[in-house]
Image (spheres, rainbow, N blue to C red):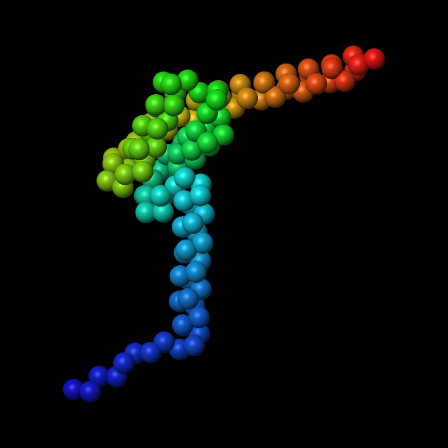
Length: 127
């Protein structure tokens, strides 16, 4: 039995390499955003949004979070990171996290506006 090896044509080889390269770039982007590439495709969109919000809050707004909120966000991140647990999560689990993200971002915006106003007052009150 003389089997002939199947070889890829140049076009097929290029497509295959491009696909691998694109997959690596996508996986790296997802990891930078705080998502697991294996669980990303099976998670509900609400859970993905909540995971992104949780990572953003912990990274950028940790000074506005209390211990209870930080613990809840870390617990949610742990649940969504596990591939086996991720299938069992319902999208309604994401709503408290998204509400918390909205609340914290509102607080941050209010503080920023207040800081801008005080800076403007100090500029105009200078002799």
